[in-house]
Length: 275
Image (cartoon, rainbow, N blue to C red):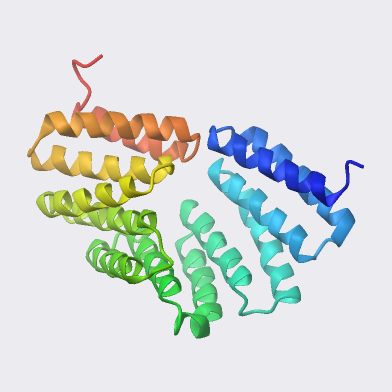
């Protein structure tokens, strides 16, 4: 029947295919159906049901429906805590995602409190897990950056990038994300020339693992901005910024980031006189 776990698995696969094409509205409907099926089969608080709810929350995050995402993530956190325990990785992940949703809404104190809960939950595991140490360091950097504490944020992103690079379990995309954060923080500090060097490393790391449009777009954007502000190579800057814009549009995510980027480009007159 249409309430079988196999159906839920198929719907989940279809949802991921829609997401890969930037169709997050369509994927959300599919993921909500997965939750209903799993609820009927396994129960409302069972791990498969909560995993499905996490997928809904992540989809809502991509659509920038952060208030709705927070509601779902709080429910996920409570369910994971009850069924798996307060220190389980899934519990901590749900909390951290909630922290990012709160950061997006500029609820900085609430976000830091939520992240601290996730860091406490991960404390034991992080002692022997280098990738987890790196994830936590990047989260701390993101909190600092949201508070516009650019210098400590740059240092924290740099440390996160080093930890990711040392970890056998981490991908080059994680390194790229941390380096992009470091370059952005350096731009915030008006250190455009330094940001160029870090941005080059970020772009190199992002291109090692093809397929993640957003990570590549972020690397292209920050390097393009650094090259533009430093005046080093405005032709290459335009090429990178054009590619970044196309990447944001293709991903179907982070529309507010795209709008912020376009406002910066307009102010800097980056695309004037180009087709």
